[in-house]
Image (cartoon, rainbow, N blue to C red; front, side):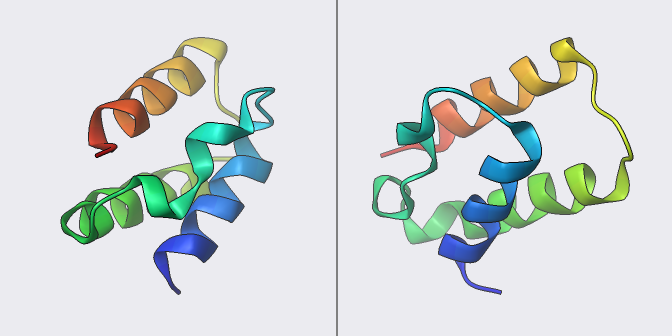
Length: 65
């Protein structure tokens, strides 16, 4: 999967209002492994608590350029 695909999948699984955080061009290529790890964690879980969703979104914000 590409960075764009991982982010699109995270966007749908997290069901957030602010979709701007999921624009692939906002992330450096060096963040790919971190995005992939977040995607694997989210995909392995049936449900995420609101706190977990917030933490994931904060981590994505930190990874942006």
